[in-house]
Length: 188
Image 1 (cartoon, one colour):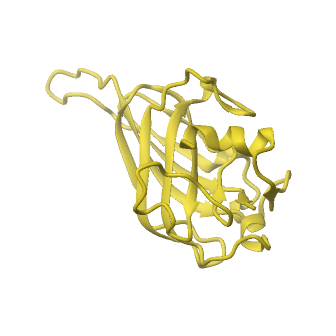
Image 2 (spheres, rainbow, N blue to C red):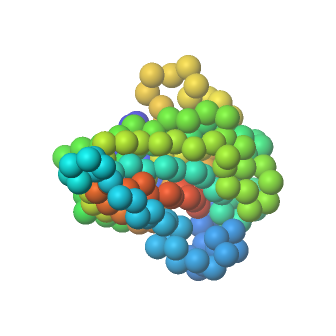
């Protein structure tokens, strides 16, 4: 199963979901999903010519929601690798990405440590050369290390995952979107 299929599996019935809450999460300080992202305005372009950059960047850090931390299906410490992909938000609905939706960037980062309550990872994934627009991250936190040596990265029981309708952010031309990605569910 590809990372793009995670949301379909979660929402179409291929897995039992545990730990989802529908309200504001205490880990995010009561911020709305839009509050999890902050686009930094920078003056992109060449300082001599004044030409503007046509692309932007995203810097992703990670956080586990309180529902993930309290889930009875979380069997391992909140440390490990994060695997996922970026999609244009318009290509992703409640059941996940459209069948023909392209993955715009592959995300893989190791040594993510979210063991402290409310922690945001020190480890950051940065993607550059992104077309301006609204993006969404879909992925999972491999807390048991089961995907490390596999070519096809797939979540399994006990791994925290993201929801397809959250973790949206905007990339602006010449700017960097600083984003905190939140894992909201634990696969069972």
